[in-house]
Amino acid sequence: MIQGSLVAIVTPMSADGSVDSEAFCRLVDWHVEQGTDAIVAVGTTGESATLDEKEHCDTIAMVVRHAAGRIPVIAGTGANSTSEAISLTRCAKKAGADACLLVTPYYNKPTQEGLYLHYKAVAEAVAIPQILYNVPGRTAVDMLPETVARIAKIDNVVGVKEATGKLDRITRLRELTGPDFAIYSGDDATARESILLGADGDISVTANVAPAAMHAMCAAALAGDSAGSAEIDAMLAGLHANLFLESNPIPVKWAVAEMGLIERGIRLPLTWFSEHFHGQLRAAMQQAGIL
Image 1: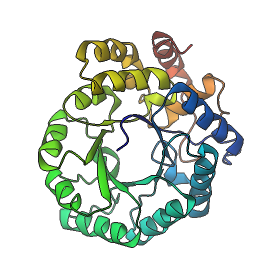
Image 2 (image 1 turned 90 degrees about the vertical axis):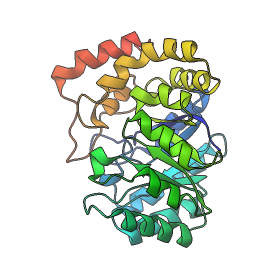
Image 3 (image 1 turned 135 degrees about the vertical axis):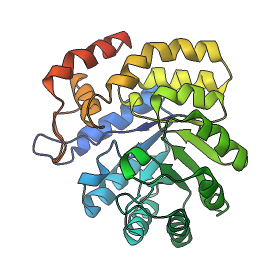
């Protein structure tokens, strides 16, 4: 089981919107150096919705190849079409990813039975560890804890990313699943409390700009150090909030570019971070010791 700070990594792009593989490789090296516990590639923060299927597969393969076993790589392979999710998950397995993260099928609003059958179909089609991903604020569907527990009985479904920010969800998920089922927060602002309540880590946006601090905060919380983890988290609170001043990953890509790690590249319909928010996010970065 992977525990700690798992970065939901941005996908570096050149000004023309093409994937910047060289910058991506440098980011992977930096996260290894900074102590990040795993990389989640081509997820929501990685602009999975703006990459076509070939780019998606090629990017996962590139990250796995460059990571070279130094850090686990979890591939985002969710889709609102079950057949597409299976295809992307097969690509990730072929590339050698350690696991896959599959968002609930967005837009078409499946029932709880539909969610179960969707995940069952992907799990049975591709023999790779799979992590469920519930983020109703972006998908318009909420996968209930009882449904997660039902899907968790499938052998290669190994965990869930719960991104509602509701702490009672973490408690309920832990009650309904066994100790070997991984639970990850998908909400940086409540990640520390989630871990103290029994989650195994955080799939984090903040870790893109403060990887060492996020690793330290998660490690302290996993060790049951409430005071120590709270002290680190207080320093990061501004980032947790201000990295969502506009839709993710707009602010975080600006922040990572501001650090000189990537170019100013993003794809429509996403736009570059609005200038009137720059000072607010820059102040949060300074508070966290980034700038």
